[in-house]
Length: 92
Image 1 (cartoon, rainbow, N blue to C red):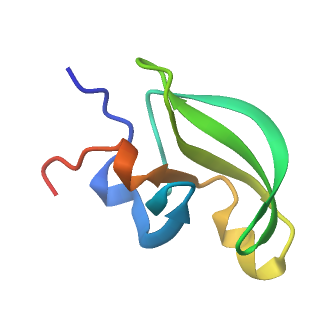
Image 2: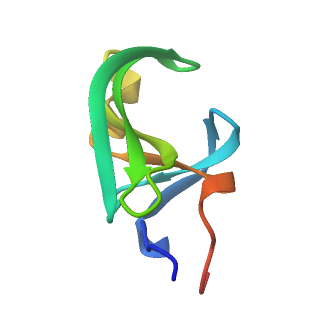
Image 3: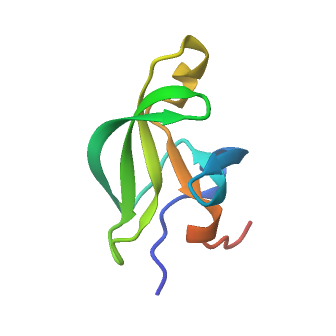
């Protein structure tokens, strides 16, 4: 059985870049574990992020934006990046 980690209604953007290619920005995620926070230099500047893991298989699915240092990136705070290659679309 698959572990549902996000809902289509919670997709904010489909044009983000993950570690391994395309990723989606979600307003919410579920059935995940959030790892420790760390500062990471991303394409859009410095962010404090925490990796997110599937609570079933423990695989890294993406990350949660905890803090954005650039004013233009603040909208990402509290949101989730889930990598397209790590999630399966159902009923989209």
